[in-house]
Image (cartoon, rainbow over all chains, first blue to last red):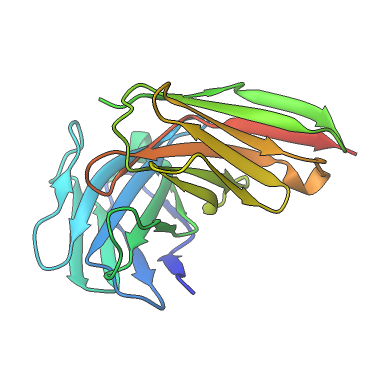
Length: 118
Length: 111
């Protein structure tokens, strides 16, 4: 149980285009999902917290107009990188906490999406 | 702001050795601490979750300890195997749900 999927797993795009990444909780519902970014040999850094039915909460330094987050249902959150540039190339990972979980509940992570912007 | 540090950054050991990975954090007011495994280019696999009220957790050859007051955790791997080669990440949860990650320890177990 507790599987989180991401699509696509790999994406290569030209500079200036927009890319949408999906994060789905397959066998549980999640009111809250998280988006992380990981640069090579660096730690995972939280970008934003996605809340079902409300606006996402962005971490300091993350541009909300560039990284659009939509959490339209209890099983799906999407991250759209708008007008992508080479410096946005990174590994994007989402996680989700079950609806019934307490604050101590573990998060379940997706397999990640590797984005390469040319 | 919570800072999580992992030492060493990289480790290479021969198969069969026991080893210890270290994690330290600056803010001891945590809800829990979690150890993850990450294979190259892949997502995260949760290994062990220690609640703030707990001292240790065990799963197979893995044992994680937590000393909240000193801001430290260790992950002990017994009888290491080449399949254990991966990056091991320590993550701490304070208030809210978000996790604060260390940079990880890259482990290589040689046959």
